[in-house]
Length: 55
Length: 257
Image 1 (cartoon, rainbow over the protein chains, first blue to last red):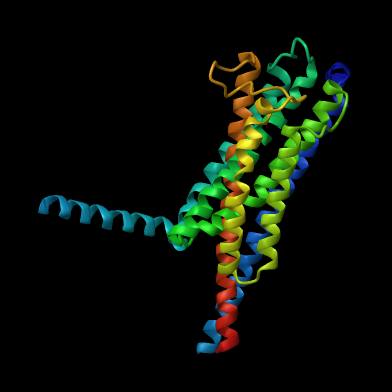
Image 2: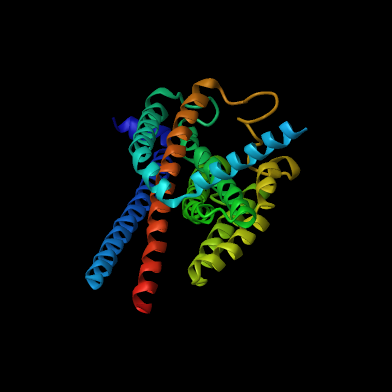
């Protein structure tokens, strides 16, 4: 197990490159998803206000 | 003769119809909602299986030992940094010439994803360079031109932020994307044109790959996973951008009325 994490002495370089990739890629996906959710909410609010002012 | 003209006319209306179909944001919203779960599933499968292959199936390199595993992040990220720019260039041409309503939405959405993969290619490259070259960074042709690519992405994104009117922003940004495209062949051939620490092309070359297949096929699996991840995030961002423009229109309508 320790040998696996050590990766022949290259562990710190290997694990940090995979970890940074995981963090940055999930960060991008989450930010995109939160933005989509926010825009959906804004459209719903504005459309509700538009129909209310019509009646 | 008349027959041919009729045929041509039909063909042209067909074309117009098909461009219009793809260009329709409402259709895109419907289409992307159906496709997205499958895209995410393929991205998850590719990245999941790719990770397993990277650590448990791919052997250590006979010269570089286990450090070669960094390749499974570095190389797919570098490929996608160029794939993203390719999408931006194609969309920008469509936006400038055909005024395709979805084209600038696509270009705008691809930019931050391309930037992220360029960043990852540079960071993973540095972390691979330290144990293999003895340094995190060298100012040579491949690394410098990739850093320039990151700056072009950031400049492109900055244009979208600073120009408020989306139509004007789209045109200015598209021109920058096309000018920046000269950097793509420079990155590609930098390892042939200049002496560099970076190794020459080892996968896509005329005489076949110089990487052993035991390392090559796990690399392709990760790359496929990353590509679907790119497409998934891009679709989410395009959906958000279409809605953002709808919000803008609704706000202007309500402010006026």
